[in-house]
Amino acid sequence: MQTLDRLKRQPIVLDENTHKYYHRPTKQVMERSVTGVLWALKPQAAKDAIEEKKSDWEFRGKDVHKVFADFLADKDLIYWPEHEPYVTPLFEHKFIQEFQPLASEYLMCDPSISLGGSFDALGIWREKLVLIDLKTQRKKNEYSTNAQLGGYLHLLKKTTGIVPDEVRTIWCRPGETKIGKNQGTIACSHAWTEAWNRFQSEHSFT
Image: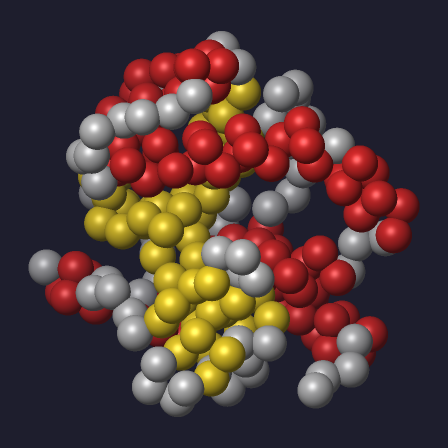
C-alpha cells in the first residue's frame, strides 16, 4: 500500500521533557508545536484555569493515550487500574473495533516554519482514511478541535503528502466513549490557517 510506504517513521526525535521536535536531516530543533501555538492563543484566564486543574487530568491523559497507542500497535496493555472506566469503553467501541491503524503517535515537522507535532492515530475505517485525535475527560465538555487537527493535517501533508478522507475526535470519558462526526479536512485546515496567521501577528518570531 502506497500510504504505508509514505508513513514510514520520519527522522524526527521528540524530547518528552521539553516537548521539542528535532529534525535530524536539517539538524533543526522546531521552535514551536501545534499544541504550543494553540496554547499561546488562549486567554490568560483560560490558561490559568487549565493549569490549576493540571494535576487532575495530566497523568490520566498520558496513561490513556499510551495504552491507546499500545492497543493500536497490538502490544500488551498495561495501565493504572483507576483508568479502567476510560479504557474499557474505548476499546470495546464498535468504531475502534473496526478501525485498522496505520500509524499512531506519529512524529512530524515542517522545518520551513519550525513547527512540529504528532497525531494520535491514522487508519482505515470503512474504506476511508481517518485521522484521529483522542481527548480524555472526566465530564462531558466538548469543544472545537478543528484547529489542532488542521495543524496535524498541514504537517501530515508536508511530511508525507497524505491527505486523509476524514478527521474525527474521540471523546473518552469514564463509562463512555463518543466518536465525533467527521469535522472535514477543509474546515480543519481553514481553522488552522486562521490560528497560525493570528499567532504570527501576535507573537514575534525568533
